[in-house]
Image (tube, rainbow, N blue to C red):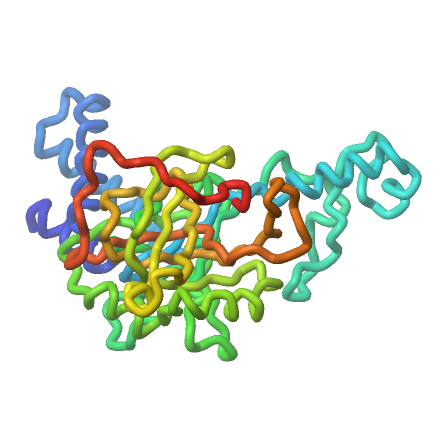
Length: 357
């Protein structure tokens, strides 16, 4: 069996692309050429294959299994202990006796993990110990099937932690292969609940045969009309993990960052606009990680979390009246049939109150 036969066999077994596994082999082969200069090329290649086999044997022992599909949304990376540590430190400064007696800090004011149990009822082994410097988390949402299965695709959610959560380059609306630990319970069989493993990486594989992305999202996630988003938000505003997918035509696009670091896009329901030119569009806040490769006039699918701030009066004073529902974007896809190329210069947006962000 030659090298490519080994690599293809392992790629099939591990649900990896041949390009990815080839790249790993080349790295190890280059390393072998540097370490064992006295060996023949054939011996260096064999040693690189042996080392690669060791890596993949370890991966096979992991409970993670292969998936393939698309990622439709990626949340911000959040340090979930930052707020805990800040509040613990503030309590120690204002009321050290309470902070210490309730196990919020130790006698030196070091913030402690005060959670005796996890949300699933299991005991927290870190209870009473100092909180870590950081604990980064990021949520990933998508649609996928288990590799080599005949089942229908399902919507999935996955939590990335640590260094993986700090990666800003998780590909959205691209055909990807990845491995993950399936934590789906019998009560949530309609969706996959996945945990990342040390081997979880999203590898783009353009050779994958996937349905049309619009159909995939429509069938396995659902698309909410822009006009229905106020009702959706009213029903789900208290759910931090709310996620919605909508679709519209881009009427306004501004690539200049706001004070919060976002760019602004407004999308419209084209059919509603035909009936009423005054119908309001949806303001979308685009983080810097979202790639913009289309222009105004394109039709896009947008994944995100709804938000609603307070309206301002003519003097710029915040009132108690609720403003329009907006969308914090987690994923964005321009439909190829309706995509317009991005010009070199994009006009700045006008007549939108960016203070509502």
